[in-house]
Image 1 (cartoon, rainbow, N blue to C red):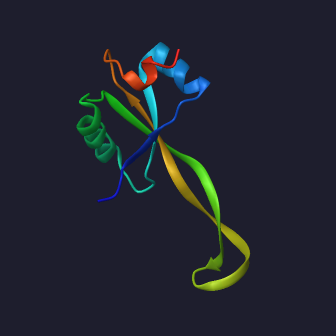
Image 2: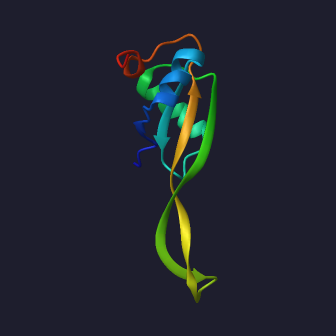
Length: 100
């Protein structure tokens, strides 16, 4: 079974999002969907999320030099992982509470 939620992403920006809006940020698998993320978040933390937003902006250079099976002189970028912004409403999450 693959791991959908990989780890929490804790930076100054994500901590401010948590304090102001109760939105937590996690790094998730690149093939996961919003429903899949919400289900596994509820299963792990016992909190039913109000909403889930997914951003896939992190990329890695895989070194592939093919396009449609033909060799080219360019490399191909592939999404390494996604970030999920999960709104937990009025609930609290201990991972983000113990930071400040």
